[in-house]
Image 1 (tube, rainbow over the protein chains, first blue to last red):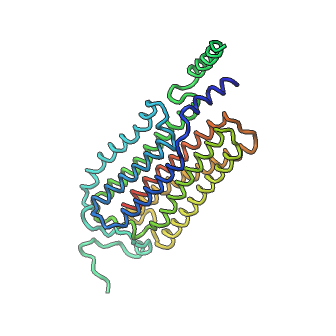
Image 2: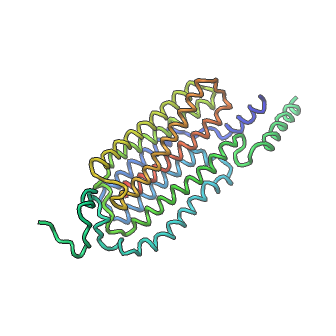
Image 3: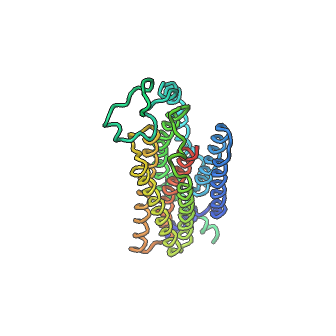
Length: 134
Length: 206
């Protein structure tokens, strides 16, 4: 029983962050995201701002809701490894995929909105020879 | 007196240090959950990385806003953020021995998860039957359904997980030591929230 109390004491040692304040930060950051989305920024600026805001929100959740900021530092390594591997995965994939022809040329099979019914009625003609239907 | 008490406390601390994992003293389940979440994060991360690489400079990629409802998903994001707050309040309740507060907030968290799933079901229904979008329509549609579907399955798992915990709290008396169970479940739920924050930005807003 006493051991349990000590364990609980260790568990409680870090106290509690102000959860409502974290909630308000998250809500405000979400509102700012929507604002950035609605504003007519250039693509680079918009993507940069949105990624930064999303990462800020993710860090807030991990540090305070998941209590990572109160954990022992080596645990951060476990939490951080996926980020490194995902960045590696993206950097390995991108040069290959973005060099493919179907990413730089209009491709009818990749156009969203192609109805499944039209696939069965006739095979899609090549893009160059596609004649507009009258 | 104080020396004896200190020796007793030291004795208990020694027991705790020897039997509990060093990374998460007092709660070995927490370390297990962190390791699981790291693996899960790699799966989600690989999906998001593949999505990003497929989309980068792809002229065939549509503007997501033409197909996806941003306002509905903004509400879904808000619901998940709220459910994260109710989850930490549930943990706070059991940490202070207030089982009723834990039950109340755990129930709210489960409700938040169900509300999120209801919104997602509505969105998928609209896209599949209204817009005729399917996983084989295009890369955009395939990556959308895979990422949001994988996340939706996690939310479903979380609702079952938290629902089971809530049910158990009615079947037997929860004590302060059960805070470990709630904390581990909370880690899972917050992770699901964290992943949605990234999906909301990468899939819907960008």
